[in-house]
Amino acid sequence: MPVFAVMMGVMLGWTAGMANGASASGLVAHEQPPAPKNPELEKLLDAIEAAGKAKKYEEVLKLTAKAAALDPKNPAIPYAAGVAHAGLRQHAEAVKAFSEVIQLEPQAAIAYDRRGDAYLKLGRFTEAIADFDAYLKARPQDKPEHWRRGIALYYAGRFPEGVEQFELHRTVNPEDVENSVWHYLCNARAHNRQKARQQLIPVTQDDRVPMKQVLELFAGKIQPQDVLEAVEKAALKDDKLREARFYGHLYVALYYDSEGDTQKSREHLTTAVEKYKIGHYMWDVAAVHLQLLKDKKK
Image 1 (cartoon, rainbow, N blue to C red):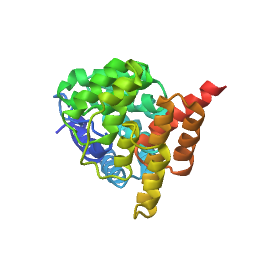
Image 2: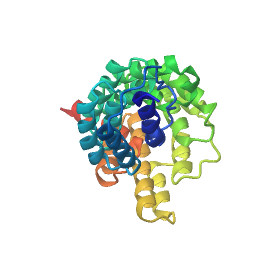
Image 3: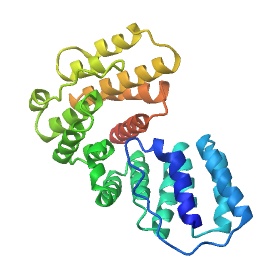
């Protein structure tokens, strides 16, 4: 089997869980003659696979640099580097790596999706949407899953399209308070808060703390402090408590932002981002939003 095809399978094997809802099957190897065997390269590729599975991203970057010197036209190598940069939250470097993949293999749909993530986390929402759309052109069946595109549409000011994206996501993920909230946020901007509240997507089975209270907050039934108190009253410890506190402050901040209270939104976003850092995609979204508010204040 060609090195290209082997490496695509290898890379997708240890990165599939990191796409936060994206399908990895858009990356397709073309038929090509078998590449001559290079024992040193094969050893490096195996090491990249092992380091990637272990999430040793710094090691992945060292190994991909060596592998690229031996096989500079193999798009799987910069793809592995891009995933490693993304794992380290080095988003500008991830953009460069995934751009190299696309240059080497324009049909590598997943590289567009991953680059879109990096663009979103850099606050470059127009570019993010363009890449997400390029991915979905190749993988249209994945559009209902693509909540990340909805978030990019919100920040790009394309609110009616955001409403449509989150309504579509509901068809595959009906019990997700976060989807309901982002639908509300887009709908409130596209129309008004009253209409957004009337059309708030109902959710009954999201048991994550404090999602029940978050939904009640956007429904106008409780106050922001009730969300934060629900977190502290829950029997949570360590990482689970940190995560619940992060989400509590994030969605309280987004609520205040939708109400036009920029100061309180900034305060809660600062707490979420700086005090309760987590490894999830939504931390990066919160960080981008906080930076937008800081830039607006200047």
